[in-house]
Length: 325
Image 1 (cartoon, rainbow, N blue to C red):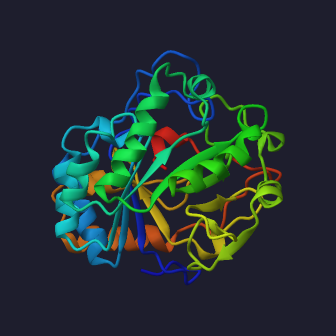
Image 2 (image 1 turned 90 degrees about the horizontal axis):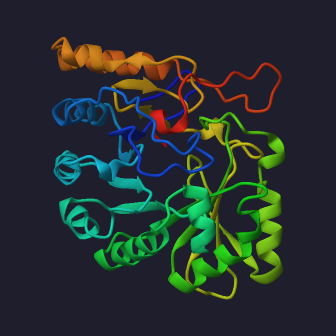
C-alpha cells in the first residue's frame, strides 16, 4: 500500500481494548477508573479486518491497548495472526499480567514484546502508574519474557520533566545489566488530563548527551520507517538504547503505520482528526473487496505529518488509551 506521499504502509497497530489496569500520569486523568469504554470488535471481526490488511501488504502487526493482556482470548488471536503469515508480530503491554502469559504467547507465534517501565525505583514507579505493587511484577515479566524467547525485549520509558527525567543514566545501566532495549519516548500531547507542555518534554539531544557522558554510544543503522533512533554501547556491553522523538525529531516523512482502534476505526496517524469506520462495513457483511477498497481509501488520505507545538495545533478527539499505542 502507498499513500499519496508515496510512503509504503506495511505496519498495523491493532488496539484490542481501551481498558487499562494502570493510570499512568502521562496518560490517564485522576485516580478513579474511567467507566467509559469502546464497544470492542469481536475477535472474529478483528481477525477478518487483520486478514484484509495482510492481503494488502501489511507485514508487521503490533497488538496494543489500553492493556491488551486484560482481554481474554489474546493468545488464540495471536495464533490466528501468526497463521496468516504476519512476519513481525508483537505486543505492547504494561507487563502487569505478562509473567504467566509470556510462554503461551511465544508458543502461539508472538515474536517480540514491548513493556512499559517508567522508573527503575519501586516507589517512583508507583507514583507514576498509580499502582502500588506493580514494579516487582513488571520486573518478573521482563525476566519471563526473556526466558520465553521473546527477543529482543523492549522497555518503553516515557520521560517527563519533573517526574522521571533524573533516571536517564539509571535506565542506561538497566539496559546494560539486563540486555534489553531501553527506548526513551518524548512526551506527546495525547493524555487525558491535558497537562502537556513543551517544557515537560525531555528532548533527544539531552538524552543522548547524558548517556554519552558515562557510556559512549554508537549509532545503529535502521530502516527509514523505524520510529526509534538506535544506539549500542561502544564498549560492547549488552543492551541497546532507542530514542523515539516525535516532538524534536519527527519521523513523519517515513511513517509506515496505520492504526485500528478497539471499536473498529482506522486512524492513519496518532494525531488524526478523522477516523474511518471499518466496523460498520464488517457488521454489514461487506465483501473482502469492499473492505480492502475502504482501507486503501483511508490510507490514501494519510496525513503528511503531525503539527505538535505549532500555532493552531488541534489535539485528536481521542487520547492515547482510546487510540492504541
